[in-house]
Length: 278
Image (cartoon, rainbow, N blue to C red; front, side):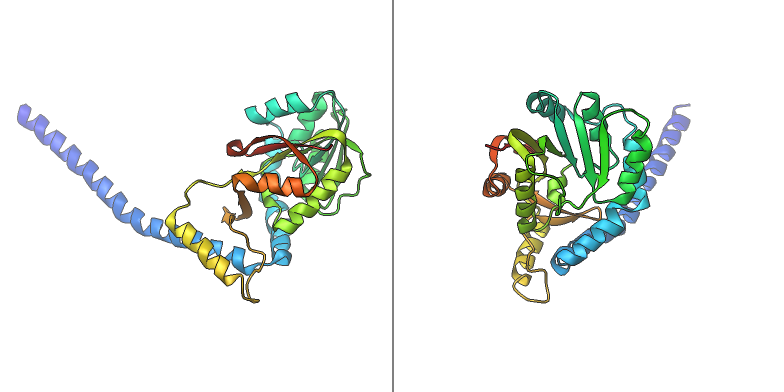
């Protein structure tokens, strides 16, 4: 009996060990291909100029059917706001007033803000996102106005809004720096004196992996040549098909100050800053 049990356990062990070794054998070339693929993907950041970035972002990514469906499905969630975001809104968006929800996607934040008593103007440059938002909320009776608007050409009057909201790390999708400054200057003019602007961004990871640091150094060298993207910035990365700028702790504050904003609060590790207009 003991011999049979030992033999059974031995066969079970051999079978399991064989599975582990086979998985390791199969996984290694796959991991190597993934590593190579992600590094090749990064070269888009040094090849594409602003024109190509805009074309890709507008038509191939944010307005794609897959992304619109994904965000529209998310809009059905009862509470999309994260804990930090909710705390900031409750703290700085008082009393209820006129809110401009920038890069609103399929309307998740706009819906929640309207339920809190705000009058919301929600805009996005993706016609598909705005169409999904209107379809979802047109019969809600909530005070939300959805519009297709270019983030770099905001068609609103000066001092029109009490509060501005740009969430879901959308500020990191504004590339390069000069366009972020232009966007912030527009936002500053739209905000009423004393108003608050909650801004979300992607914080840089401390201590980049060696291969990533090598690419940054290489790209900073290549940007000197006309054939490459001369507006490439350290911190620009392709992440799962989307071009993102990762901010160092001092970057957000410097850019906001250049546009005239006061930084009331910054939670860099959580990727939030709260700005005000004097």
